Image (cartoon, rainbow, N blue to C red):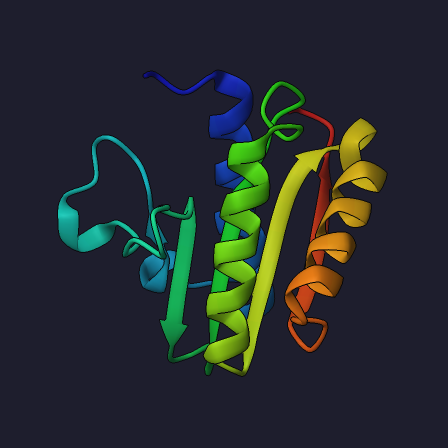
Length: 136
């Protein structure tokens, strides 16, 4: 299945934000799930899911998982299961950060969804960030 331009924009924004805020502006440490990336440049599977973006260790000194969700794909069971798997992985691999990029109109929904999942999975100690993106 090909990715929408909205999803690609959100993934690019995730990479940029993570690079700027956690990697001294060096995206070379970021593994991205893109069709043209070879296997060594793609994130590892976490549970049954592959995150859009993954960073482990230097220079971030933490695990960072990033997931991009468009208006059309945030409100479904697949997303719930993904977020649970990613938050559980982050919880077991502290320090960690879970970043979700969504269009601005979905930011409250995404924040509430992540909070509910954190309560359910007892992963409140995982740092989370919801990036609001106007292009998605």
